[in-house]
Image (cartoon, rainbow, N blue to C red; front, side, top):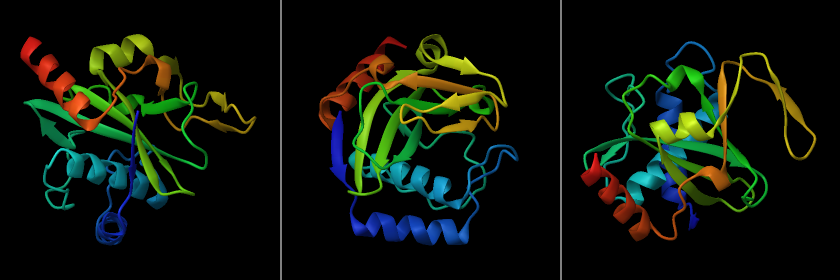
Length: 183
């Protein structure tokens, strides 16, 4: 896993974008402003790590593509947490997004207390659908701390242990480049 402190300028930039644009465009399970902010911070951090342009909020719906790496379309999925990431933690993927033209998913977590982004790992779309557990809309999901929620839409959950691991940003770039060449 990769751990990166989130710079204040990224937080400020994302806060401004969230005030100016609505990033929830599906109409169902769009996420509240805090969830959209968390996702945008994760996306901006990955863009920064890959020297890619930051999102501007212009142009409307991004069709599930946050950036392109080695010719691959990438969607960054980020969850906010209050504890350090653990191997058994799951990453959520809303089923409404499975038909978007995305090649790769990079899963991240943000520790809200320490303002640290953790890149948990990555998967191809096929790997996500194969390795994740599926839960129909309305299913009661219980977290490891005993709290629970009902799914707002069909939901896929993939544990960190089922993601392709990364040791560094260079390692991630190399692995994605290798996958792109095989595709």
